[in-house]
Length: 256
Image 1 (cartoon, rainbow, N blue to C red):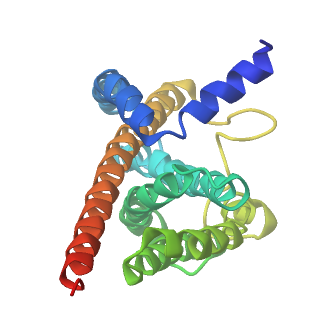
Image 2 (tube, helix red, strand yellow):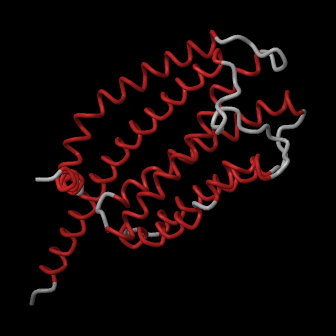
Image 3 (cartoon, helix red, strand yellow):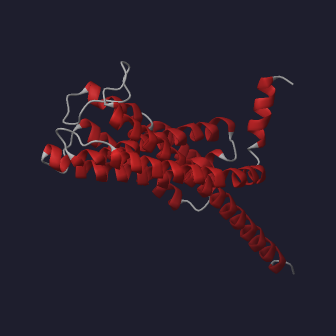
């Protein structure tokens, strides 16, 4: 068996919700432990990092704000990939993955907007300004809320899956706009200082705690996402059993 065939078989095996539940159940304890440990280490390094010579102690908001902004975009990217799985391969777990990432992504986006506002008030003298970066992130938050409303408006998950996947892929155009908004337009928001082609411009004493916090946020996301996917699969199974029971009762009552 070739490596390609073996990898396809492993991927296809995950399409079985029962196998996914068994595998995720074994992974979750280790993932949650790694998330907690990395978060504690990241918080310690963040408080131990030196103050900025211009921003003072307020620079510590960066260790909460910047990873939240990264995860807000990463969550939506995960949803976009899952949406392709829904539309192209009709993977039974793709819709579950996209739907359950929604509230997590919305929470990271809200945290990014909130901490950015708290950071902007002492640095810029204002809580909010309609510049390109802030506005595009706010649009991302609205997209999360809109997709959540779409799922809630339809009781049948199968009916909501395809329109939600299409809307998710259409909305993905906002992700590169967020990333490059500070390069394309002269805005109040500072340019990128970590993800640059010529390397980070931030001092290592602040860069390392920031990267550890980003790892912690990523592990938290995958932990919450796996837990939410497991809950959604079990919820759909219960709904299916109730539907079958109702149909059986209806068929029995219709007999002469």
